[in-house]
Image 1 (cartoon, helix red, strand yellow):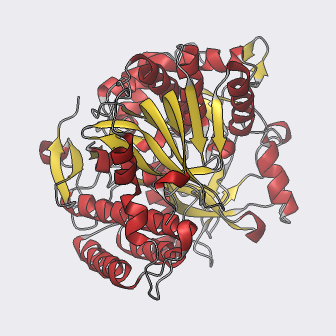
Image 2 (cartoon, one colour):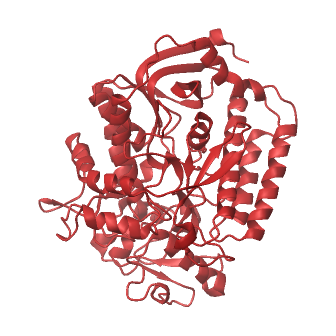
Image 3 (spheres, helix red, strand yellow):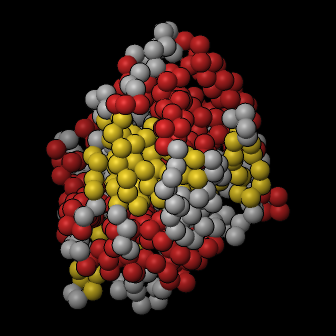
Length: 550
């Protein structure tokens, strides 16, 4: 094991964990609030793939406004949303857009106004975008801006534990990618912006660098998680052509004339959503409709449906530059043929319970983006994942800079030793199960037992299989070196989160949004219009409790 003397130490006012849009937005906001800032990250997460984000400007339709946006979120979230978070997002989106424009992030224009696309679940066209995808462009500009304003970046470092002194968070312990180096960053405030559940489902659009760490860190620090049962399946993920497998087809294309067709050529969404078809329906419900069509035997042989782009006007189709380019490179011209799509695990409505200031309730700890829960309720309307990270990233950074704990006079050796306990516990173990084999096993268990449809039988079997997997990890894990010790901790975090998803799904005996049970098919407001809260007791056991909506 690397000794304490081998550890490098850095001190800063605010530490931001996460290299995506939420992390960079937090870092910029904290720095501009006058704090010194360290930004540490392993990779970029899903941010480079973001196409656009919702802003109620009214440029495309003058009737749009923050109140209309608020109502769409609550309706799309099946009323399970934290209202204070919805209000903060609805009211903060315009200012967040202005901040991005001010640093040079480009957006598509329509004359002297912003061009806006109409995404599913939104009453009006409100997604601002760029033909080449706004995620990569915004991230590149934010990276440059962070350098310009003096944010200290630590690229290629993965957090393995938060630094804690009793009930307070004082920074994090990090390990360098592909090198036996440890770094302790002492900070008066820490922002978790490392994403959500990660690729813990075997059929998933998540990038591999997201590993559910944010949830495990927050739980260990004493925070509460909410709504962990709500895993959203992206409805339109490419199955064919093979070269684009896993790519998401934008639901914005439906506003431009794309259609979903079954194997018989029927535009089946009008059976499920009369009068609107693919429009004005949140993604969770669309995923369910597509899956029902496939399960009923009306899908294609590869268990998919057609995402028909052939009727989109040429200028509109070609505005989706990256998608058209990738499809053609894979041998399919979207102007002539339709890609095959089906639902895949994509995002998560649950996460760390925060207030409107992104505060977790644990002194020194804030959370933003998909690390946090509550804003989306039981389902996330299209375009709102990006709005969440952009708006709440800024809120978290400003809050962290304003409310820091005093880190002077701490017994740092004791704090460091506590953070190292996890690595010391697993490193050097001998057995047959390598850490890299845990994620595939976990992914299969969750997809089969806690997939797009759930019931007590499947969830119970998943819980038993997870217990068996955990026992194998406890008794037969093989860990050689610091790098594999880090992967073993990641595997443990993913299995913990898998157990939480299953436990919360078993507890919620109703169907709502992205949580659909075949044995409790009704949406039961009388008993279940509340969050499922998750915490850890002193013995590290999962504790579920009802948390009221505020």
